[in-house]
Amino acid sequence: MYAITIPEPGGPDALVWAQVPDPEPDPDEVVIEVRASAVNRADLLQRQGNYPSPPGIPPYPGLECSGVVAEVGAEVTGWRVGDQVCALLAGGGYAQRVAVPAGQLLPVPAALDPESAAALPEVACTVWSNVVQLAHLGMGETLLVHGGGSGIGTFAVQLGAALGATVIATARAAKHEPLRELGAAHLIDYTEADFVAAVRELTDGRGVDVILDIIGAAYLGRNVGALATNGRLVVIGLQGGRKAELDLSALMSKRASLIATTLRARPVAEKAAIVRGVREEIWPLVESGSIVPVVDRRVPMAMAAEAHRIVENSDHLGKVLLVNEERPA
Ligand SMILES: NC(=O)c1ccc[n+]([C@@H]2O[C@H](COP(=O)([O-])OP(=O)(O)OC[C@H]3O[C@@H](n4cnc5c(N)ncnc54)[C@H](OP(=O)(O)O)[C@@H]3O)[C@@H](O)[C@H]2O)c1
Image (cartoon, rainbow, N blue to C red; front, side, top):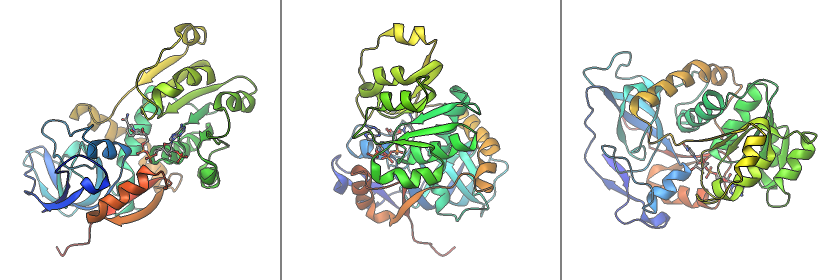
């Protein structure tokens, strides 16, 4: 098969479409004939040599895919050759085929075309596990989503609105209108305005109940400043650095919580539990059209370098898909 390889870490042109060995499934795995994968910001780090695949995972980038089940391991139940699926991966999605533990598979929702389904597993699992499972966002609460125009952000905005929360998102002005259509009640242009002051004004000084943060160190103190009493700050990205000082008394006086997670490093059993939760709680929202995958554009997988350039420049809204040509069965 062919896959996107990284012979030498570097810029987008480090991504090389090359012939590689076909995957062999373990007994608890299936092999997917990949229809599409999607670019995640973590793939850019992997390309630069800073976020390698965990041991035992294919070295090619790609944290999610959609496609058709081509092989089923001896211990797998519930899935058959020919099933249309999408999957949460620890790597290896930028390929024609990938082996994945069966617990990380989801059916392609009937409401979606098989390619668009590739835009969902990573964001659905990340956002649901953090915002719902850990931060317990509830109806009537307020959610602040940093980077509303990102793959993660476009999903979080829709999920927050679907759960009955008031969603505030930060994004560059060009992305405000589509985010409003996705369910954001208020938008803050973080390049112009101080989001803490804006949040205070929008919430009558109360602050927000939950923050989904992708910036990390550069926003830590200000995020705590924007929290309401009993607020939950969930850090899932470090685009603004990893080391910061925090005045803990600010957290204590608000009885606030700080949560920080990564999905890729979680054990297979934990990923399977998250995927089950997503299937139960999120897939019905996708079937009903309350949540849609936001696909900015589709790029042939062999041209992954072009897709990385787009994401690196933040020229996209939502997800950039990498699509394999349909191959005869
Ligand atoms: N922990 C986990 O398990 C996990 C899983 C998945 C993703 N993530 C993280 O989630 C983040 C988003 O991933 P993605 O693939 O969805 O990213 P993406 O589509 O590449 O989007 C990146 C976003 O960052 C925004 N941004 C940059 N600087 C900002 C600032 N100062 N304030 C607010 N927004 C800012 C950009 O907004 P504008 O275009 O408006 O400037 C852009 O929308 C990444 O940091 C990624 O590592 C973590």
